[in-house]
Every structure is written in C-alpha cells, then in structure tokens.
Amino acid sequence: MNTEGFDIKRLAKKAKVGATQAAQLDTENKNRILRAMADNLLAAQDHIIFENSKDIAKGEAKGLSAAMLDRLLLTPERVKGIRDAIIDIVNLPDPIGNVTGRAKRPSGIEVGKMRIPLGVIAMIYEARPNVTAEAAALCLKAGNGVILRGGSEALHSNLAIAEILHKTLQQFDIQSEVISVVPDPDRKVIETMLTLNQDIDLVIPRGGENLIRFVTDNSRIPVIQHFKGVCHLYVDKEADLDKALAILVNGKTQRPSACNALETLLVHADVANELLTKAELALTPFAVKVHACKNSLEYFPNGQLATDADYDAEYLTQEIAIRVVDDFEHAIAHIRQYTSDHTEVIVTENQQTANDFIRKINSSVVMVNASSRFSDGGELGLGSEIGISTSKLHAYGPMGLEALTTEKFVVYGQGEVRV
Image (tube, rainbow, N blue to C red; front, side, top):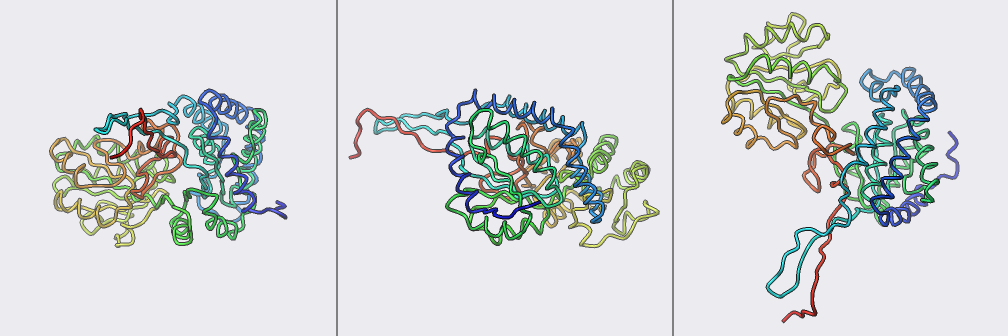
C-alpha cells in the first residue's frame, strides 16, 4: 500500500469541513445516503470478501489468534449483516434538531434542549472490518464526520469498504472526507492524530487493552474508553439450574471472541455440586479450557487450578475461570475486585436477590436470567453500536446513535431582560 504523501493533519482539517456538511443534512437525505451505502456494499460483496481474504491470509501467516481471525473474517452472511445493520440505523429516529423539555422559567423565558452532532469523531480499532461500515453509518446519521483508523491486519478490507462508501457519498455530492479511512498503518499516525484537538472532538479506541491505554495516555482529545470485557455469570443458590446452564453455554461458547462473552462463572456453594457436574458435561463438547478454584477443580478432570490472573483475564476463546463462592456477598466482592465494568449476569428466582444484584453492581450492563450475549447495541434496541463504553462519561455501556450527539440549550423569549 503506497501511503507516500499521506498527511493526517490535512485529513483531519478536511474531516472538520465535512462534518459541517454532515451536520446540515436533514433526516430524509441522511437516510437516502445510508440506504444507498447498504445496497452498494451488498452489491460489492465479492470484491470486499476478496480483499478480506488477503487480510486473512496475511493474518494466518503472521500467526494471529483464532479469536482475532474470527473478528477479521468477512463472509457473505457477515456482509449481509453489515447491510442489515445500516438499514437498522436508517430506521432509527434521528436525534438531531428536535427541541425537548421546554419549560417556562419565572423570568418568562422558555428553556429547552436540542441534540446536536459532536463534530469529528476518530475511531481507532483492531481487526473488525464491519466496524468501518457501521461506525461510518452511525456517525453520518448523527451528523458527524468520522476518521476511521483500523488495524493493519484489516487494511485491505477497510479500504475496500471505504471505496464503496466514498463512491456513494459522491453520488449525493457529499464531500468524501465526511467518512475518512486512514490508509497508513504506521502507529506514528495515531500519535499525531491524538494531538489534533483543534479538528477532532472525540476519540473512541476499540480493541485490546494495550491500545486503549496507549490512546488514553497520549491523547489531547477527550477519550471514551472501551476496555476489556471480563463478563461474570453468578449462579445463585435459588437459581433455576436449567436456565443457568443454557445461559452459561450460550454466553461462553456461541462467539467466544466477542467482548460480551462470559469469562468467569461464580457458583453459590449450595448448588455447586449439581451445577458444576452438569456444567462439565455441557462445556466438554466445546472443548472449553477450565481454570477452576480449589473447590471446583474436582469437577473438571482436565481443568487447571485458577490464579488471580485467570480471574482478571479476557480470554476471547473457549476458556473460562470458575469459582465457588460462599454466598451472595462473596460473589459481589469477587465481581467488584475483577470487573471491567462491561457486563454482569445473575441467575436467580429470588426477585429480592436480583434487585440487590442490580443495585450493588454498577457495570454498564447488568442482567437477570439472560445471556451476556445480549449486551449489544442491536439487541438492546440501539441499532448498531460504535462500541461499549466502560467510562462513565459521557456515555456508559453500548453506544448507539444518541451517544454520538450532545445537547445545547435553546432559550425562547419575548424581549425579557434580566433584573
């Protein structure tokens, strides 16, 4: 890939101009553009998958993990999934422009709030080429410009997708820099980009913990962090064990490379014997590697004794840490110690216990009797997500369309002056 002459500073300035154009688009025009993007991506799926195959071959030669390769892979079904995700965004209400919460003040003025675009968003991410299209669509619908810097492992895929997106923008006479994909994989580009606070309004890193820490430590621009997903399942003493097993198997094995996959199972001592006996049988067909505490190791003939590091790990593969806890408070203490503030699940038939869990656990998503795999923007009704924030400002949890906007005050008066 020839990147000679590429200048991230110049690109950021063009993105800022493009963001101004995006902010002026009305809902109908944004949706027309997005529908065309969705259709054009699906029509170009053979080309996109061919370019993706270059990334897969390079990744295999480089020795990328199975989890990373799975995130990288595009198939006809996954390209259709990208198309469907964009159509979901089309169907979402446009948050931009409406004035809400209008209220009369004693002075006579009327005060409301209007949602507006953030400006230019820089996305830094690894492996997932679907993020290129879905993040671009979300940012455009929210009236933002976006700079997308994917990992070198997905460069061919990302540039192929970008080509389609840019051709679509040109069909509608929209500046292509509204959606910019950085063609240079050099990390120095990120270092420079993180200093461009005059042109970029927000940085969202999405990937490994090292990437996110690097961005957080080096950015002059506000950062929304998406740290690892150490998701816990706690099976209470009053759990329905059939539900617990189904949630365990689905959460761990359906797509272990996802950040909402389960990484730790906590089991109340009163149900440990029955639950773990069944869990061993349920997980064995999926070849799940088990790191078990001393009180649960006997149930897993091929298990290993768990360490503190195992409970802190985001495995992203068929691997899980297991611990028997003495009671509910022991489970809460474990989660608080090892949580990444992503997603925590309790299985219980006791509503009071469920309510206590919800109140005491402040991760971005807390679930009762449901799989952690539902911790996803689409499943939670947001349409596609641009990431899952583990920062509490300015968004927390799966970030959909509204999270890519901010609010301004709008004041209506009839000539009032302050006295």
